[in-house]
Length: 173
Ligand SMILES: CC(C)(COP(=O)(O)OP(=O)(O)OC[C@H]1O[C@@H](n2cnc3c(N)ncnc32)[C@H](O)[C@@H]1OP(=O)(O)O)[C@@H](O)C(=O)NCCC(=O)NCCS
Image 1 (cartoon, rainbow, N blue to C red):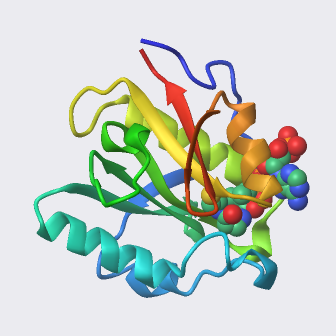
Image 2 (cartoon, rainbow, N blue to C red):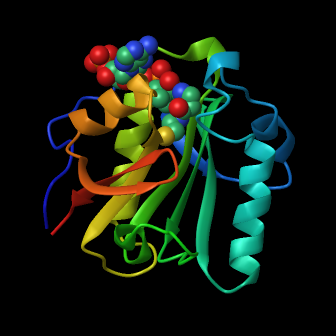
């Protein structure tokens, strides 16, 4: 198996992923991105609702709070072979997909995004829903921060687009 972010040393040692529960639902829902980033990712409440609907249909979705100790600093959601809607990039039909990912506006540009991505990739590489060959994600054109971050850990465009989103693929085998 391919190693990803192998020698990366976490900046925030207490950073962890915590599954969404009825206890942390509200605080995670109220985390926000900057006004100018609102077109890059939907509100977290929508993400959690969509994860619920996906699981209710018998498909795989997991939503996480990103915590530094007790402080909620971000939100992420992953899927696995979870969608095949019309126009869906082929690459996303058979992959672990980083579906939603945000760091709260108050704590961006402090290394939380890169650390959290490391935790999320490690988790997907543990194959919580069975083995897979690729991890996918996407970014909205113009989202330089997300693009830089994803490319720097090995994601690469495969030429597919989904509306104004650029599809990225990370081979893991
Ligand atoms: C993308 C995002 C998660 C990054 O989180 P972050 O905590 O600010 O990122 P970090 O401080 O860990 O920085 C990681 C890398 O992101 C990139 N980056 C972060 N902010 C950037 C900026 N303002 N301009 C350019 N690149 C930037 C850099 O490559 C950076 O690495 P470097 O510090 O070694 O140069 C955050 O900006 C965010 O939540 N954005 C809004 C939601 C979003 O766009 N989500 C992605 C959906 S595809």
